[in-house]
Image (cartoon, rainbow over all chains, first blue to last red; front, side, top):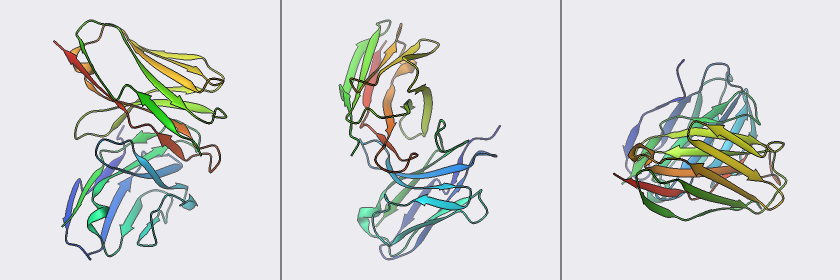
Length: 113
Length: 114
């Protein structure tokens, strides 16, 4: 079956622009997670959802970052007024339930010029 | 707050050797631990998930052990091959916050020399 997919795979934007990153989880997976990964580091938790409910957003760096999962499937991570420090790999993962094995997508490489 | 440390940060060994990667965590009240593999420019692949009630988990040439009380896990790779070259990450739940917030180590970058 299909794994977790993310789009776009690469995004280059100018400082100050808004970007929207999309995650399509494995079908039937209740839980969906967003992470950010800097070069040479492990992924850093941003937020997660069970169905459409955002259960924890403690990892979002500031109020320019937001995420939604309106129908309990596809999720969008939005970064408003991007800054150069937002440049990173953004990864999405999904799992059957909140304590199950997490499966990751290929990531979106965001570059803010 | 849960902290995860992986030692060594990088490792280079000749093909065929058996090797051990180490992961330590500060809060032992975890319900599971997961090992991942990351290839350059690619996503993370789940290798093994060990539940807190288990002491080890095996998949092919990989064996992961978990010692909750000491806050340690090891990933043993037998008969290493060049295709095993990748970064290996371990991850555990941040038990002080939500059950699903997992904390990653920085990884061990493994290189297997032919």
